[in-house]
Length: 259
Image 1 (cartoon, rainbow, N blue to C red):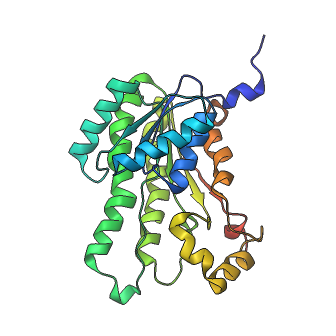
Image 2 (image 1 turned 45 degrees about the horizontal axis):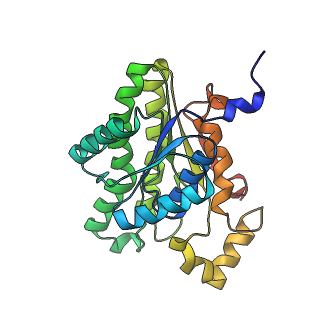
């Protein structure tokens, strides 16, 4: 009998790595993959925080959950970290490049150190981790890579020119990876969130004027909830998206659709 269409979204037997997943959007994304059946590797900089994150995912999903703490901005650390994951959890079938930071300052006052940090964490890390994981995917002839972009992959705002540049880079890196990896049976897409309420954006949520702007600017009339991202991620990580490649999917309540 043919498999049910819902089986297209089943991730049972797949191993997923989500970088920057000890909290916030990354943790929710990792939990969503686990709930869909995947073995998940949580990644972050602090083992104690990762241990707590692992327990929170286990509370919500009956899944195998591992942790990793390598530096995504260091190619040698990436290589050894991925090797360790492969040894302990198996080949990586799904990669979510989520690690990222934000720095704000007027363009004329933006420091070189902050620029370098943003490029290294938001863009170079996706190249380093993506390249290392893709090598194994090419040998196996399959794989899913989801790079996390932003509405700033398409839109600019005062004070975040550098951040927007890195997220614009993610959009084009995604397309370039698709061109190179698509013939090997690998799908590479970007998931681009709008304005989401997380612990990292709490100050903006609490700013009445800014929060009112977000709600007015977004046709859905609200901030995003991190759980709003899970369905799209599962789709992009599953067989359901086998003919979807090189796309930037905006999950933004309609913000990028209107002026």
